[in-house]
Amino acid sequence: MTISKKRKLREPIAGFLHYSDRVTWKLGGIFQHVCNFCLLVMLLLTSVTIIGRLFGYSAYWIWPWTMVFFVWLSFFGFFAIFIRLKDIRIDFVAKMMGNFLLTATRIISNFTAFALTGVILKTGPLVFATSSGVVDGAILPGGNELFRQALSIPLFLSVFLIFLSSIIDTLKMAFGFPENKPEQN
Image (cartoon, rainbow, N blue to C red; front, side, top):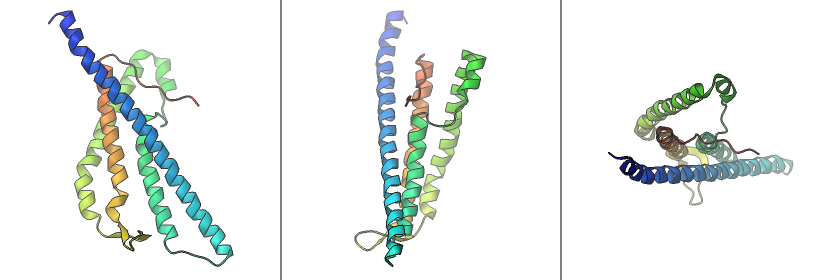
């Protein structure tokens, strides 16, 4: 295969990788906003509980919904933290060892993510099958209670997106593209 043919083959793949990377980065931002919304709802519900006590008001449904939003906050946060590179990293140690170790940590990180997310995704059908019943007290507008499976949906969505992001980053590395950098605030 000539160099020009390789270049023609590489360009659409490179474009797709950049596009996929931008989409997952933007999804991470959306997930971050969802986490902020969950936290805001939790704070509002807790405030209602505290202020309501002063006036003798108590609502049975507040605590279960606070718990639901906490679980959703945690699960949506998995992907937001992963893709926006806000997790705990030891890059400073790898940087002291040079480019080889930086590349090695990238490979190890991606393959660890493949393994862990693969196991979690494989258990998904079992988790949904055994998550029967409702979340007691998490009352919906129609009077029904929230199904327990609703707690796991954000987890499996985040895990799937982490798996996909690891594939994208591994392909980026194979094509010689640099690793994403965390946003500086």
